[in-house]
Image (cartoon, rainbow, N blue to C red):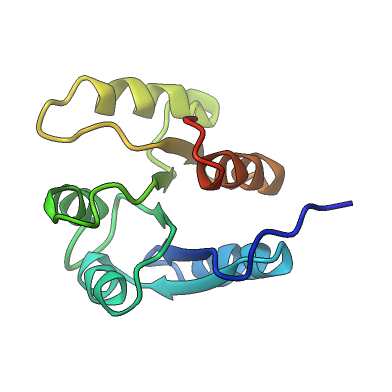
Length: 140
């Protein structure tokens, strides 16, 4: 039986691919979360200011305002810097090794490491497990 989280738990899905946004939003909704989406960093920033999410999934490579640009900005805004952010990206090593991406970002001082990484194509069990841990206040 799936543990159903509080309905007040909101996730913002940020990705420029409509199919990915729809898939992740439906996955989260089917597992008891409220989900909204944004197509780029500019839309995401507006969405965060309208209704603060409890967690953000973030694609890195997007037009207009990139995921990295959005991530830097959100981390610097008082009251929003503590929102858990999970990078959901195809920017990974051979075989979709998100550890390559994680090691890359962990060495960049201008970009603090996110709370988690998930490689595309997304494994639904992996992302749900990570989201549950982060929503419970645990580190990835």
